[in-house]
Image (tube, rainbow, N blue to C red; front, side, top):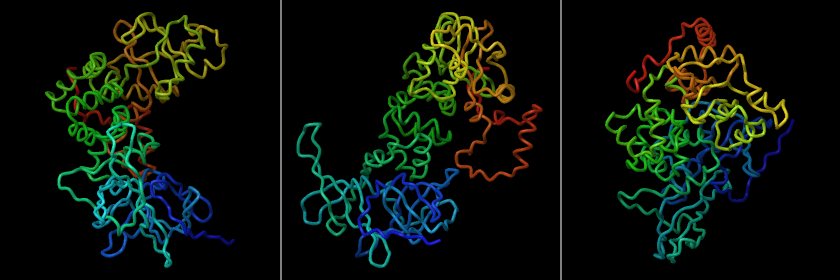
Amino acid sequence: MAYIYIVSATRVFVARLAGCTVFDPAGDRVGKVRDVLVVYRKNDPPSVVGLIVEIPGKRRVFVSINRVTSIGSGQIITTGLINVRRYEQRGGEVRVIAELLGRKVLFTDGSGDATIEDVAIKEGTEADWAISQLFVRRPKTSASPFVKGVTTFATWAEVREKATEGQAQSAEHLIATYSDLKPADLANTLLDLPRERMFEVAGELPDDRLADVLEEMPETDQVGILTSLGDARAADVLDQMQPDDAADLIAQLPEERGEQLLDLMEPEEAEDVRFLLSYAPDTAGGLMTTEPIIVSADATVAEGLARIRRHDLAPALGAAICVTLPPYEAPTGRFLGMVHFQRMLRYPPHERLGTLLDAGLDPVTADTSAAEVSRILASYDLVSVPVVDENYRLVGVVTIDDVLDYLLPDDWRSHDGNDDVRRRAAARSELRTGSIPLPGAQRTTRGPQ
């Protein structure tokens, strides 16, 4: 079988490569482009040495530019030979998207400065790639917030980098480039940046976007980023986080710092977080979220389906609706039961949810162990389980992702997924017998028990 390789003779803009799919010659998907790697040269424009590609398992690997046979039409074709060793940046290498976009440059003709918004690369006559042009924006000349500076193209020889000591690089273009990434992917991208650059980019993210990203990061990095923010900004970000995630993060901070941030948070949000901090982390109370969907028994299927259509609702929380007596915010009136999303689909829109309760699902109490909660979810094929207090009032729900976050090792986000099969089988056996060693024994207790 013959393959036809297209040699690109046109320039390719790096920002448009972010997220492009990489294929092998047979058409099988290899991964997605996350960045382009260049090295500086003394008298010539920087040379492209390869791509940083994210392959399954969230592993980022280096693909030499010599193994790229075609770039264009939103896809990249390689020879299919890829070293799956995790990429580690070496001295002299520069990541275009992560480090070059947003830098300030000065025009050598003395006409002023500009900011790099994109970089064009082009293949040379000897199959080598190099930066051919820079797409830059000059400072705006009007005070109007709706006016931007003019844009222009410049060759590498026409500019030089503006090195102002102590001045941080702009993070706007990096954020714009990764605007379509899911929070988990953006979190991995930030973790790959140099630490100071990570703090800078995190500081430029909107509060809600940063909150989503922090929820996907290891606790040590969460603390590092939150510490780099001012108290007021940190409190605003915590307000945007899910209460259980915010509680986990505050639990990692010194007690005095945590109290300061709680005092600065919105009262209702802070109340939820304080409530969760009162439970041990290895209990249902320590794992639950206090914001499930709660309705009355008279609510209809149509109303229930409308509630779970919210775009900001986590899928696990939208899988079932809690039915209680008033009030309908946790802690609620007496808990009546849950109605599963799949069951609602089987009934007409006017059917009352109070008639569709799952009679076989019993709630757990806030002091139920995490091990017991995980066994209930696994045994009955559930994605969430309700949590009640001693008066049978609903106080929250524990979802499957809450349990997974707890049971997985601390470094699971950077784990390569190559565990021995026998270890996984043994863990499943221990889970069934109740002897699984929970990581909660090593976690910090959040508050008074």
